[in-house]
Length: 402
Ligand SMILES: *Cc1c(COP(=O)(O)O)cnc(C)c1O
Image (cartoon, rainbow, N blue to C red):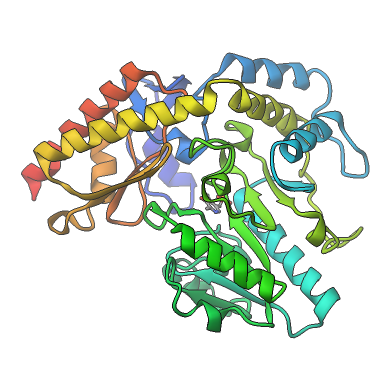
């Protein structure tokens, strides 16, 4: 067989720097390589495969829909989209939905809605967007400019204007940063790519208060934290702070591409007919799979199972760290887990990720200094132990190199 990894380099833009392991199939929390290798998947397709690989009920939902209707334009309403929209609205504090295909598009939609709402109700000066340093909101030009990591956006200048960046979890400057000209504030309840940093409750409470005071739309980017990842359907539920809109994607389709925004009635007039759209948004195949995925995540025992597994991860990571002393802090919100490397291992998260695949565990990074774990919500206990054994070997190897 040809060497796929080398062939890839011949034909693709060099963006990702992939690992050598090439999966050909998956089942639950296991990935299988072409040469009989098996690895434990602690990456969950980057927080996407909430229900693991090849979940039989998702396969059934996909195949059943595949025989009926794949795609219709948004000139027509389709049943899977309506069922999914109703399910999300009935299980959240929001009133209206819009479907798209990715996290970036959902962030883009939320920001455009906020800008247009502010324009129509308050005039063109009210257009500023406040985001936070180290945040990640996607890769479209607007979403990457709103994101708080200059390394991702600066080379694509000129960037869209009217965007400010505050310091995450810092309350001191918020009263200056949010004013009458603020159209929207966007924040991740836990900064995921930025290093798995949970927001403080007081910070989100203050954002809510200032957005109310200045009629600004508070958007939570729940692309990574939403759909059960943290042990609640949405992470805002942990905080008792209600945003005006959320952007979701990643786990929503259980591996099938789909994104969405959910919005409060108050702001829903930000979009009117013809002001926004998406060819594939609300695609029947995507919505049929997502409808099944969200139903499975809402089924009794699922979300509590996330918290039980999170506890086991915490316990095992702490034990591992007692012995190896590689992490300065282990942070988690449900099964979104970040282990920050001690100063002597700074910058080694990528190396750890690559080595993990050699030791039988698929890991993620979040910034250069944090090892991130975001497994399937339903990862079996035995696979947690086996993956942790792989992580242990990985870290021993890294220690021997430093
Ligand atoms: C992954 C992610 C995005 C971007 O999603 P894409 O589907 O890659 O466009 C946006 N925001 C957050 C918080 C994410 O984790």
